[in-house]
Amino acid sequence: MKLKGLQEYTDSAVGEGKEFEEQLRRLVSVPSLSKEENHRADLRRVQETMADIAGGVGFETWISDDEFPILVGKLQTNPNLPWLTIYNHMDVQPAEEKWEIPDPFDPVVRDGKIIGRGSTDDKGPALTTLHAIRFLRSQDLPLPNIQLIYETEEESGSSHFAGYLEKYRDRMEECESVLVSDTIFEGKHPALSYKLRGSLDLVATLEYGDKEIHSGLYGGAVRNPVNVLNRAIAAAEDDQGNVVIPGFHAGIKEMEGRELEEFQRVCSEFDVAAFRKAAARPLTSDDPAEILRRSLHQPTFEIFGYDHIHSGSDRPKSAVPCKVAVKLSVRTVAHQKPDHLREVIDVFLQAKVREYLGHDEFTLTVEGQGPLPFVVDVDNPFIEQARLACREGFGADPLFVACGGTIGALPPLQDRFGAPIVLIAQSLLEDGYHEPNESFRFDQARGGVRTMAHYLSSIAELRLKSA
Image (cartoon, rainbow, N blue to C red; front, side, top):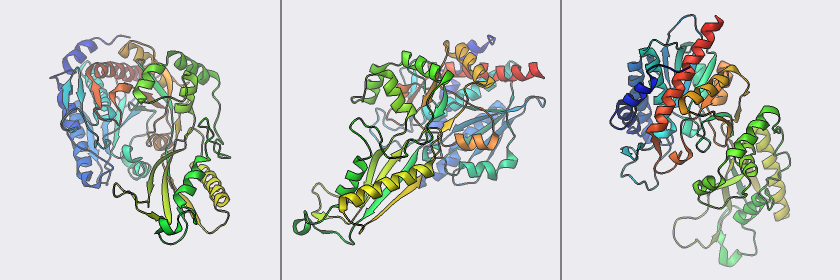
């Protein structure tokens, strides 16, 4: 169903020099960095800015006083209709790399896009949904009761979010579904994400001896804990990069039925060359199915950093350390259990270190946690309405995709509301999630407004017809 006046609205409100740009500039200019303690005040400031924008659409808003404040906004349109919750995050990644603009928090408009940290992840997509709501209200078109929940800790893992949902339960309405727009197109195709990986962040610490010793006196006569732990970790993968830790893949379900059909459709559309260009390095395979399985549907086991070893000058320190800590990242997939994974990794590394040293005179610990993976059944009426909305808003049927990234808030939202979660992508891969020169294109924003308007209106129509 075409929504009369929608094209005219997006043309007038979204673009260079228009209201959408001004509002997104306000949001991006707030350095809402959840990973940095000296920016805690900015987390509240960005929520206050968003409250002001949402208030102009008609929402009554409230902001918590927590370290990572959440915003709850409510717009009741019809007491006979159910509530729909819209989730977005207002915190952003650090922007320490070299950018093509002087200041990542002083956005620049160029080539039909706005460049700045947080423009596409996740402030721009949040703003398009508010514009969709404003359009529907201005035309007196059907709209469900809408509840906004914006958080400010997503880029740090959302570790407090489940607690906030429980702490402020009385301030929230029960809802029939949840809408999220923090995902990415599959190439040039609209995308509905139904599965996301989790992120188990571990630190493996090996202590061997009680002090550093001179490498010229003892090197070769003692084992270096850095070498030993690296060797143990390297044994976790075979020559093809497959994780071979016993029990590591427990619980993973093979794709079948509609999920397998949708996966094959994505494979047929997948642009290997574009993916390779974006990765800026050789791939492990040129087969689309193999690339997508590895990057979206299988868990990973990777080293991301070291602690307790010398790194303070150009020349290495001539000492054998007694302790090393290795930062490990495990991207988990649906149905894997973090506690089980931590245990099997611990058992594997303990055995390997013992094997290499030939004795038990060491201490090895494996500790850590992280956001859980997420999956939703693709066969539900809300996802079907989202498919139709993408066709109207972006001009093409969407692909149903898994996502290799993590949104830590989704499992808590699923537990809190027990409702289907629909993820409608608005950003492109080249928009630069977590990268320098992150941007959000105005043509994507216009498509996002149109898609969200059709989706929200169709949800209201669905319930009005069944009433």
